[in-house]
Amino acid sequence: MHLQLADVRKSFGDNSVLRGVSFDVGPGEVVALVGENGAGKSTLTRVISGAHQPDSGRLLIDGTPTVLKDPQAAMAQGIEVIYQEFQQNLFPHLSVAENMYVLDRERVFGRLFVSKQRMAAEAARALRRLGMEIDVQRQVGELSVAERQMLEIAKAMTHELRLIILDEPTAALDEQESEQLFAQVNRLREAGVSVIYISHRLDEVFALSDRVVVLRDGRVTLDAPTGQLTPARVVTAMVGDAVDDFYPKERNARDEVVLEVRNGNGARFHDIDLQVRAGEVVGIGGVVGCGRSDLLRALFGLQPLTGSVRVGGSAVRVASVEDAIGSRIAYLSPDRQAEGLCMGQSVEANVSLASLRELSTGGGVVSRGKERAATGAVISDLRVRAASPSIAVSSLSGGNQQKALFAKWVMTRPRVLLMDEPTRGVDVGAKTEIYRIINQLTADGVAVLLVSSDLPELVAMSDRVVVMREGRFVAELTGDGLDEQSILKHALVGAA
Ligand SMILES: Nc1ncnc2c1ncn2[C@@H]1O[C@H](COP(=O)(O)OP(=O)(O)OP(=O)(O)O)[C@@H](O)[C@H]1O
Ligand SMILES: [Mg+2]
Image (cartoon, rainbow, N blue to C red):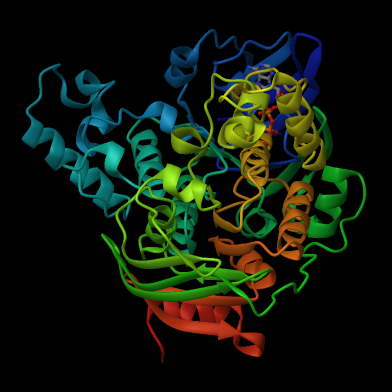
């Protein structure tokens, strides 16, 4: 497909988000669309997918001005989107196979009533063709974030595709899964499908795209073939000036042990012995499914854990989230929709939610004044871009939602902070802001456990990294021994 955007504008109230966007995507071309959180990338995606109507400007498909009045109209043109908040498109109570065909059984099978076996067989075949290993009988609600995303992509690829927009598709994927995705994108390009690829990871942008379009405050500030660009030039177009100290790591570890786990066992991790000292950041490396996310969830009372846990030298129970919060353990979830944020609630309510006890004036009554002041301070420290603290969290851009989630846990003044993919979906400038806050927290003696599939981040921001494989710690890396290759080697094949 040859898609042309000509002077596209879109406002929400008096917030003008797209201020005259023009660019082209040719057949079989991969255009990377990059820009800071809130620049307007997802909004533009929704305009192209028919989910939003532009206020003005034109969309041309193969030279013909086209109005996409709704998502069905866009799908009829062969336009598919994998949304940033992809869970929206899936039904958690249905199986993988049912999800693949729930909306177009008739088109695929020629009739409405199809046996479960036939759907399962077809789904398994389609997934295998795409090189994806997912059990098609499983309920979608039980899949990991990464698996759900793979399913979304597979589902989109079963349709007649002419243009696909991937809005931060690798945010939830590990290295191997990302490689698989890149292979898919390359296959699509060869088949003449146009691709708009939105990502905050510049290494991917440079590896994958033919052209880069930078959006800044709703305007195109750079549009050039990837081969003529450097990462520095792209960052400058995004933020206006150069970012020098990208990983401002401070070493704040002290001797005192804050978190200690002995003989920790859970559904997907075994024999975990771990100590995290005050001010120390311990990274956990490993592939998706190795048990690292389960370990964090268990320490926050979201999954069963046997063994002993101590915080500040005292034995604690973490049988529930209330227990964990009571022991001043905080947890930053990778899945902000499912368990991080209440989308319908205001930014302010979300940020103060986990700290209601500290904010209450005795008798359990929450002081509105205190809530306002305390949340206001954290929101501005973290530079959460929200029109006002009282607007719904759902109307923030993806990266600003992530910052709001971070703010919520900073507010609880934790002793132990468990972070799973803390900078997922966060732009380059905001990432550095989050790293600085981690420094502040560790300077105050907070013990941090960090899970991240962004390996440069894991290496740069951790004092040491333990690598997990099949639920067990298999290596500990520090100093000169701590680098991306060593983490991968231990995570994938074991000590060679
Ligand atoms: N439905 C909506 N109602 C009101 N404001 C909205 C709505 N959707 C988006 N916005 C606002 O539009 C701006 C751009 O948001 P958008 O989601 O397009 O950013 P983005 O570039 O995708 O950012 P990110 O990298 O964080 O995902 C933000 O200020 C956001 O708050
Ligand atoms: Mg977005």
